[in-house]
Length: 154
Image (cartoon, rainbow, N blue to C red; front, top):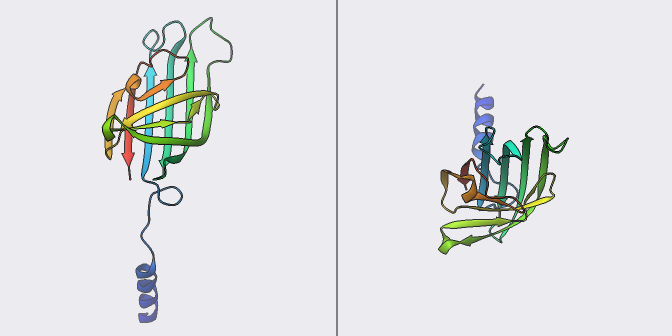
């Protein structure tokens, strides 16, 4: 019994610290849930609801990896098949902006990695709630309505 207790104790002591980063040494992990729900409140006449769910690991060298999902629900009479979900993934670049107060992320895309977006988030660790238009800009779209929940973690 003593030998088993010592063996378990040595294993626990020998285990390294668990780190939550992706790959080797991410400086930030970013999670965003950006949503708009309701006919007429999203993009009138085009989209009656959408969601963009984004995760990225940002490395100290200004590179990163991302995974995302997005979906849109179009109103009656719009393009058939446009109501659907997509998975997106790839590499991003990032830098500090606004005197270091924010992080700008480029290289991510939605709609199956076909439509580029730019993301601007606070650089301090924590949880934030912002208007979607302050966080995500999608190429070729008007400013996004809705709300973004943002988590900036080590």
